[in-house]
Image (cartoon, rainbow, N blue to C red; front, side, top):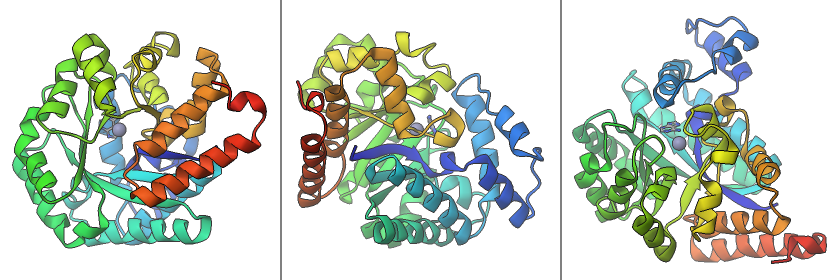
Length: 334
Ligand code: ADE
Ligand code: ZN
């Protein structure tokens, strides 16, 4: 089914096989000698225990070719899952802080994105994330370093360790990004409370919320998000692996849908969390007994919530409509 993926970290899509190849290619010492022991390390207590491994793992990304290979592998996999448009997250501070030049990172990623457009017709855009455990001054540095490529960027976002680093810490940075015509998004309400989601909306004035799970704890906020149709990029399998939720049975997703929010389904860090976008769709369908029309609504939301220019967005929605028109009748039943 044609759809967009709006919440996927490039660094979180390095499959173990590629990770070990890159480590060898760049002579980077890593504590895992084979795929099985590496996969066994993907056993996380919480967001921080994941981020520790994730940031350390970034050391295998050194040359533009490495960033290209990781991005191209994800885009191929996404294409196989019916993704026709992807908005990718990248955290340059995790690379520039190790001495990798911004140009190296961006040029590698963009080469892969152009290839995916040319070879698979998959469009994509890039959103740079500031790491929230770092200072707002460092976020401004990131913005300045990225400015030579501003016209090629969709926008900026906020990722990393959430609790203790509220959106308000980055209020001036976000205002600055917006004043430069950038789209803005922020991870909020993954491990943090509903008040962080509210801050992301009210202080940062984000175009979308990444995760947003905790908004269910604030009825007024829930109504506000539904009325403003502020999209949430929800990542169910990520939430299970990082113990944000015990199971899909207790996950907030059905409540978000019930409240009428513009929910999208995404994979977050697919190689670490046991599934790409279709795995997220399928496991939710099985857990919640969704009719096909619910899957179509989620796909429609993803295209609606994308930052595609209007003509392309309408064309993408028409592809989804054409898919539904060709599908068995229950796919279009309300
Ligand atoms: N960076 C990569 N994955 C993340 C997540 N799930 N939450 C916050 N920052 C991230
Ligand atoms: Zn994320």
